[in-house]
Image (tube, rainbow, N blue to C red; front, side):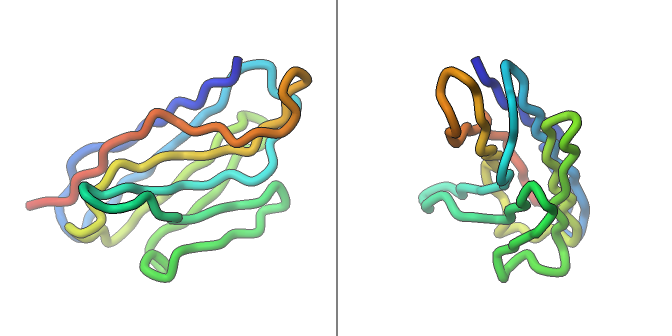
Length: 120
């Protein structure tokens, strides 16, 4: 069974930084695209950033130049470095990984979500 565990969230002041991590475990044979999404109260979940197995990245316009997504393929882990955080970026952040397993083929798996609060 595949499991994604996120870490690194918390409370930060406006303009501050946080680094999120998401590690996948289980009988994993390969991981394709990894990504981060967020959902603020009363809003739909939205894309923050994605990274392909080859390292190509894609960012939401609102985070370009401030957030950096990266991955460690050996550890099936994806990171999100967030700088210059704004109060409106308070949300639950979710990681997503497209994982191949012998039993299920390729599926998208979600982490449980981690709270990021930007407030003074």
